[in-house]
Image 1: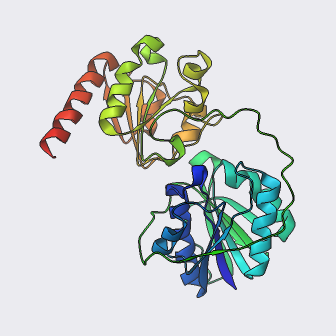
Image 2 (image 1 turned 180 degrees about the vertical axis):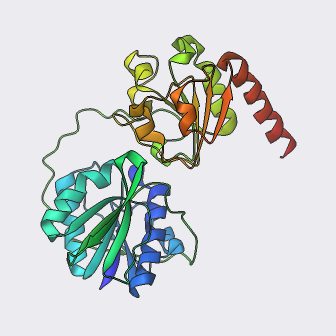
Length: 320
């Protein structure tokens, strides 16, 4: 018996989501009094670092497609689950994790719990909490299948260094050739990808037009934050669609979400209300977003944001 964690490595490197998943798997293995094994695909450059976050062993399958192929990824991971006798498989609740979770469940006859945001409890069987109804509730699942797949919500479990780097063991599996052909790759622009961001600055129609977006970009740059927008902004072509957050866009869970000029429709709130702290800036004191905010500023964004940006810059300058 063991806990196996699939550590994603987009662009050949294990990033924040992978480190969070390994730390979570380590804690889960401690609860179950078993070992924690990390699995990577395609030999990421920092795979050995997963030992620092709690992996007892690190296995890598080098002969996988460089692009995501859900069928091949699921086959490879399932074979390692069976080879290591893993009873718990931890995935990141990312686009990659979502694309392979169902395939893995069918192959392994396993249960899948999405949006997991807490460690399992084993006093009365195997129980684990998950975010439900777009963050408005928490569901507790009693999992009875022999193999359990837990899909960990981003930013719900902090990555912790507890040990040291370990050697990576290469595994050779006989895998089929990919049936997918990549025609074009469009990469997200910006220095901080939204799913990994701890700080997010988001704007809505209150900016009146794309020519005013530089105000938001300057604040985001000062904070070192990712940028996002509401759906009407993306639909109007002011900003690219990969910045659209909400139920029909990207779901984010940063430590700080700053909403500027966004009214706070229920569809937008569904994608951001799991943020640890929400700050709303809007000139309309009746904006629905204020009901979900931890802090609110009633004021014209064209006056508030430049002053806030300047204050952030002065604070950083005086604390370096």
